[in-house]
Length: 388
Image 1 (tube, one colour):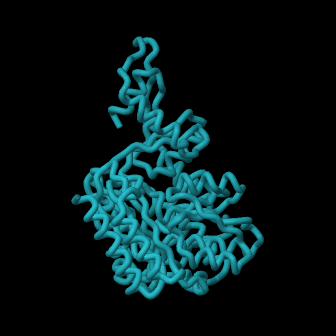
Image 2 (cartoon, rainbow, N blue to C red):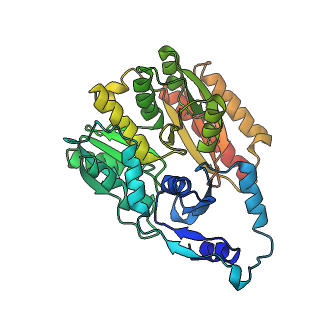
Image 3 (tube, helix red, strand yellow):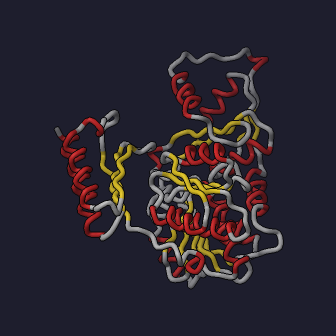
C-alpha cells in the first residue's frame, strides 16, 4: 500500500487509503466518491504468495483486458516524479468500512430482516473480516464469525469459500440455520444449510434467478464455460434465456452488459447482480439469496430442489508459464477419449488458470466413476507432456 501510494503521489495523483476492505467495497467507494480509479492489493481466492493488483474504473467496473495489459507494459518504463509543488496528497478514509456496510445493507429489501436466523460467517481470514459480520448482525441475524483473524499470511488458508469444510463444521457445531463463506477479497460466495450441505455459485445463482423470474424480473442469465449443464437446462424449463461467457467474472459482466441482462455468475461463487452492484460481491449476493428465502418462506434446499446438478470433476495440474497444451497430441488424444467415454452426455473442458500456473481439467457427466477416470487420464497426459 505504501509503495502504491508513493508512486501515485509522485505522479501528482491524490490518494484515499481505505483498507483493508473487500474488493467490491473498493469498487463501490470509487463510484460513490466520484474517483478516477480504484486499486486493490489482494490474493483474491489464492494463498498470500499470489498477491496481485486489481483495478476499477471510475464507474466501478473492472478494466478491460487491453487496458490492464497496457498498465502491465508500462511497469517496465522509467519512473518519474513531479516537482514538489505538484505532488499528490494522501489521506485515510476512516469510515470506509462503515460506508460499505451501509451500502451492503441497502441491497436487502427494507421491509425484511434476518431476525431469528443464526448465521455462520466465514471471512477466510481476508478483507471482509471487519465488515461482513456487521452487515448480517445489523440486519438482525445472530452471527457466528469465523476466519476473522488475518495476519497477512493466512488468507484463504483452510477457511473461506475455497475451503468450506470449516464452514460446514461450524454450522453443525453452532446449530446454525445457514453458513456464508467468502473468499479472501470478498467477491466469492459459498453457502451451507443447517444440515451442512454446501451450495455453490451455480445453485445460489439459480435460487436468486428462480425467485426473480417468478416476479417477471429476469430477462436472461449469463454463465461461463464451467457452468453446470443442469443449470442451463433448468433455466430452459423456466423460460429464462441463458448464455455462456469465457471463464472469469469480467467476461460474465461483459456478456451481461452486451445483452442488457442483470444476473450472471460462475460456479466458483462469483455472482453479479447488476441491479445491486457493478461487480461480483459475496456479501451482496448472500443477501439476495436470503431475500429470496425470506420472501418465498422457503429454505435454500427448497429453492433449489428442482436443480439436480450433474457431477463435475475439476483437477488442477501444475504447468510452466507459457506451456501450450493445445499443441500436444497426447493431451488431445486423452481429451478425445474422454469425450467418447461420455457418449454425448457430458463435457470436457481444459483451460489455463488466470491467477495460478495451473491447467484446469474439468469433466462433467455421469456416472461419477467415468468422469473421474477421464479427468485423471487427461491430467496424467498433461503431466507427461510437462515432463518431456
